[in-house]
Length: 156
Image 1 (cartoon, rainbow, N blue to C red):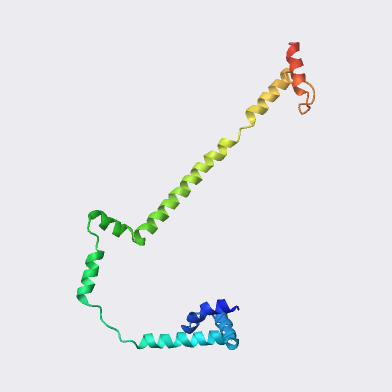
Image 2 (image 1 turned 135 degrees about the vertical axis):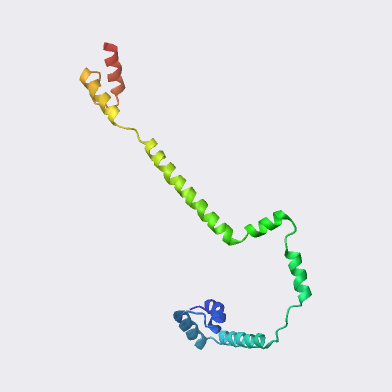
């Protein structure tokens, strides 16, 4: 474990919030690093001092003033305040995603079938043209197929 990684994990180590593997890594690093040991001691002292500070009640008049200032003043503000809560947007967003995926799935099926041409009519036409002798002799892949086709149409 690098010095930088353990430095960021010291607070979690102090609060027992690390997994057993992470805890063991920090422990082994602390055995060799005086700087991290000193930082851990400083964090521990800070935590103890903050815990010993007396707590004071929030003044009631200040609390009322803050709540008044935070309260929306218009109907639109009240609407936005209520709609901004995740309990409204999470189900709405999930519903929108489901509808979008459903539309893509249904629409995608039609798009795939539109890309392919049915071969049966082409095979039937080819069989009919072959039976009537309308297909020129020769290699259709050869580069002179157009010449064969022109010669065939010139004979008729």
